Length: 529
Image (cartoon, rainbow, N blue to C red; front, side):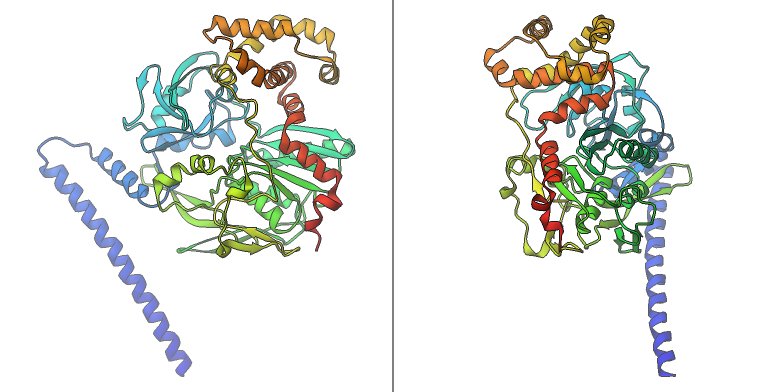
């Protein structure tokens, strides 16, 4: 009887607490509705109540976290296009951050990436018209930047770390819908696969690519998630499932008003055996971090590169009566060992500038600049080795960013789209002769070289477009420019698969991954208990 009375007592207080909370919400809702009614009835001028409500919702969400957002009904229709459909435009993923168009990432293979738009850029003018601090909406951005393939749009960009504003002319194009950029056999039994986002097509693309690689004798895989800003949660879980044994935890979510929910691997994995190395960097976020964290926590593979972005908040789409939407953060992502993926966001300004702080602190150049407190220590689930939480996935092998070839000439050549424009025109004029001379990519890969004549034609073209040649810059950047020229030509003659085959040859992350797989017993010995 005492136990029953105790249970009734507990239930009473729980129910009472719910009633009190519900009453508080009702009181505040009534308060807001009354204020809106009085404004509408008594304000000296006519008011747009729809606008007032939308602004109130936006301001309210702005007080919560960086990723809780409001979308109009028009924006809801367009929200999933980069992940599900086809559209034509400049090819960027963006957010409206502090009333400015903030480039989350240029879409791989799209026109913005080709001319040098970077993650973190802020678009402040479109066609000479100021768009910063003007109350711009997602709808406005779509109307300004989307358009038919072949049309051009001029944008002005503010880039952190640069004193000058940067002008770009972007030729709109069809935005690629595929999430797989490249898949090829590197050598012996090693394959490479690059995924640019987690879309509805990703798993089918992955399975198809792995099937083809296995036919070529591939048993070990380099999975490139650098610059991958994420996508669908369920797709991330299914991709991790490809590598993990049945019932192994992939990720779990938890929040104050959301019960802990666990997502585990099934028996459907196509790559549960074989060596795996995953490449990440500061642009790898959300779904990329879920996959990397699960592989690392289960000691399934080696993670190399630089610390990932640190986006681990779960948004739930909640439709409002007029079909607009709130994407409300309801939980946080945790890796199987219990690591929190999300980096701190108590100070919004610091959150916005966190990647810049990494640069200032030297984190992109040296792992020694990264300090983790003991409170963030976790252990992997097989080898019991130390890993750290608190924001992003820290790789097992740190690879610093390579800035050895940077120069003003190189940056301007890319930023102004001059290199890409020159190669497009070169290939257009010489496509037939190039195909006759190089009947396959393998022949092109082995034999094609950028000679002095072609390089001089490039610098001459750039000079005509207002970019003067600087000998000291050429000496620093020439080798990298020639590499890009060859890769761009290969991409235009074939596709992005061949582009990465050329670029990966000199990529320190890729070459480290290759070395690890080839010397697994020594370089990946920490995976073995």
